[in-house]
Every structure is written in structure tokens, then in C-alpha cells.
Image (cartoon, rainbow, N blue to C red; front, side):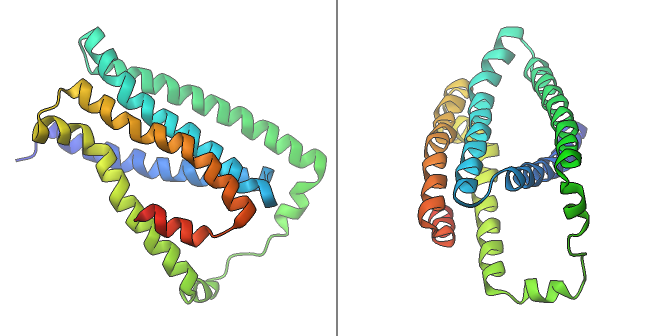
Length: 203
């Protein structure tokens, strides 16, 4: 009973959703490489603030653009352009990053990293901290992302809000997170308590 367009949307969301997570891991790895110690959490907080600004823009800009051009294709094309710009900047970053590794001698140290061994998985899965963090991540993802994806439709169909108003109301949540995340990152740098902050954030 599901229409073909909905099936295609599900497949696309699955593929690009996986890409989104890989992108997040890549960005985190770059931050870990360039920042260390007392500045890393603040750097990650600033990165997340920019990401929240993107979420805010999706809810604030998509509906007006679609309404102005009379087509849902217009915001999709805009997203495609922005993703292409992001890919271009990432490729430029990769070139400069590799060049810096060669000039600073980081290539040798990177090659000397400890190789992956399957027996190390026992240490990971046997760690209580790993399971706490894993469960917190599952709780966060299952709570935040489905709500974020369907909040506009929920407010529109269940509460009766206009689509543009529903998107505008929900856009305040990522904007709030954008302002709160960098100070929380700075607090984490200075005071620690990362697991406690994860628990409170998930709740």
C-alpha cells in the first residue's frame, strides 16, 4: 500500500542517513586531530552549533522557498547546491591536511598506529562505560531524530498548525541548542563530567 515515491524516500533517507553519520565521524576525527586537551570539547561544541544552525535553516527556509517557487524541488535543489559546496570544501581541506602531514612528519606517526585486532573487541564490549555511552547514544538518537524529522507534520496534522508556522515553531529548538552547545563544551573542557552531561541531555 506504500506509494513508490515513499519507498524511494525511505531508501534515500537510509543511504544519506548513513552518509550523515559517516560525515559526523569524519568531522569529529578532524577536530580530534587539530584540537586537544582543554579546547577539544569547545571545538566540538562550536561544530555542533553550526550544525544546529543548518537544522534551523531547514525549518525556516524550506517552506518559504517552496512557496515562492511553487515547487518542493526548489529547496531540494538548494540543498544539493549547499552539499556540493560542502563536498568541495572538504576536498580542499583533505588536500591541505595531507600536505601538512607531509611537511610536519605526521604520516610516519599515523602509520605506526596500533593495528586493529578482533580480540580488542572483547575489551570494548566488556567495558561498562562503553555500554553506558552506547545506550545513551541509542536513547538520544531514538528520541531526538524521529521527533526532529516528523515534528512539522505532527504539529500540522495533529494540532492543526499551518505548515510554515509549525516549521517556524520547531526551528527554535535547534537555535536554542546552537547557543547552549558551545558553553557546555567549554564547561566539559574545564570541569569534565561528560557521562553525567550525556545522561542529563538524553533525559
